[in-house]
Length: 260
Image (cartoon, rainbow, N blue to C red; front, side):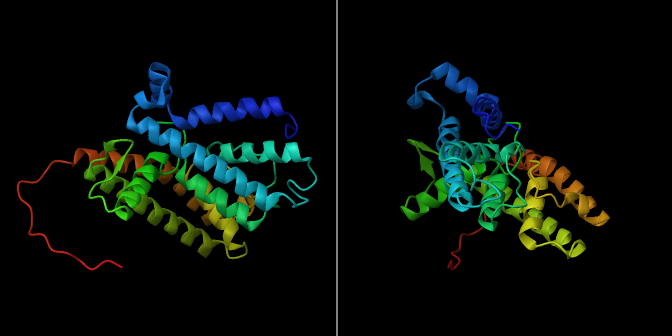
């Protein structure tokens, strides 16, 4: 009903964005105002969120531009606003299109965005943008030959890089199990739709292709567990890692392992 109402979509998008970047970032920006004075955490979030939004909106527009069941019949201006709204919306669950009619590429892109989610300490789910940012910075630093991950003139402790890799890897493993069990208990649905539902549940987003009511009882149980684990699991894991971060009294001898 609000697909053509730019004012409503704009207000919703602004609220979703503010909820996804966390209160800490909002306070940091309000206090310091200039980008160079912001903390590294805020800088990384404000760098990666626009990249994700622009990439998501661009790919959404590309995949759905000529799809008569989603954007195809809309004027160009409305295609742009709808694409941007759907890109912002990957943490909230609102939608102005029917994802059951969307192309598979769109479902894949939205699944990836939902898995990442919003910033740490925000109301959004997912593994968090901070986790992705730290991993990407570490990868870029490795490619550039630097011994430690660094960005904006600040070095990220190796311990935090390990935590980010651990949270991301375990979350991927959890999601793999959710998809596996959902696929085993619901063999009549296409695989990408099951992935979409699994990621949406795990990241507590709420977007759906419409197949949820038709899933088996076991499928519903799997999604319930996925929502609970997705909301509590990564957060609990981060706390556990933080509590067990004491340096040991000894270290083993170092030995290199072949990589690649």
